[in-house]
Image (cartoon, rainbow, N blue to C red; front, side, top):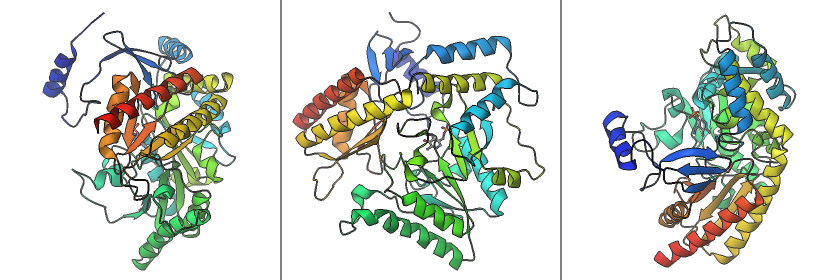
Length: 437
Ligand code: PMP
C-alpha cells in the first residue's frame, strides 16, 4: 500500500527544498514507512534486515521506549532548571554502568554537542586547547569538531589540519608494517602519539586532550591493538592532557563483553561521550566525567542546554537501560557477535577477497582486498556487495579510508536467525559481485 509521495517526488522535493549537502543512501533510494525490531519496511511492503543503523539499539520502534516517551510526553516536558526525578535517576543509572570515578553526568541532544562539551571540559581542566586525534577520525558536525576530524578536514570541502590539532596514525593492525611483531603493535603504534607530543613540546605547546573512538569506526572498524589505550593514556597524562573516549557509536553494551568499548582496553578515560543508541532514536546525548574535571569546568559559567536532559529524553534513556538489562542484550550481543565472527571466518576461507574479518559483539567489519599479500583495497567490489545486499533486502554499509570495509552494527536484539540471514545474503552478494567482476 503506497501512501504519501512517490520516491522520485521526494527526491525532487529534497533537491528543491533541502540543503544539497544532504546525501541519499543507495543509487536507488528507499522510502521506509515503518520499522519493527531488526526490520525496516518500505512503501511497497518489502522488509529489509537492518544491520547498519546503530541508533535503533533495541530494534526499531521498541514498545518499551515508545511507551516511556509517550507517557512522559503526555504528562510533562520542560527544562532542567525545574526539579524532576528522571534526570537524577537516569544520571545514577548511567554512571552505575561506568567504572568508579566516572561519576558526574551532563546531557545534550546530539553526539556533536556531547563532544563539544567534552572539549570545553578538557580546556577548562588543563587551561590549554591543543588536541591529539587519530587519523581518519570523525567527531561531529560543528566547525570545532570538523577541525578534529581528519575524515572531514582532509577530504573534499575541508581546509586541512588546523595548527592546534596534531594527528597520530590509525593503529590499524591489519595494515601495520609487516616486520612489527603483533605483540608490539600497541607500543609501536603509540609511538606516533609520543611523536606528536614531542612535536608539540618543541613548539612550546602541550596537549589539552586526546580524543578517539574506542573502536575507530569511520577509519574502517579498526580494533585497537591490545593495551594501545593504556600506552596512550599514560603518555597523555604524563604530559598533563585529558583522555576523552568517544563512545557515540560503540557504547551501551554493543561490544557484548562490556558496557563500554574502552573497557576492552583496560583503561578509564577522564571524559566519555555518548549519543546515537542512548535513546533508541530519541535525540539525546551524554557526557560523563570525573569529580575533578567537573570541578574545573565549574568556573562560574552556567552550562544550560534547552532540551538536554529533559524528562522525556531521560524517560527514553531509562527505558533503553531497563531493556538492555532485563532482556540480557549485552549477553546476546556477545553470543550473536561471536557466532557472526565464526560465520564470517567461514566466508573468508571461501572468498580470497576477504582480507580481514573483525568484530566485538555487534560491531563488525569485513575488509575486502584484491590481493591478500599487497592488501590492495577492493573498493569497487565493496560497493557492489553493499548494493547487492540492499537488492537482497539487507542493509549494511562501507567504511574506511578506501571505502573497502563492509560495516555492520545490527541492533542488540539480533537473533541467530537474523545472523544466518545476513550471512546467506552476504554469500549470495559475494558470488554475484565476483561473477560480474
Ligand atoms: N562521534 C562519532 C564517533 C560519530 O560517529 C558521530 C556521528 N556519526 C558523532 C560523534 C556526532 O554525532 P551526531 O551526529 O549525533 O552529532
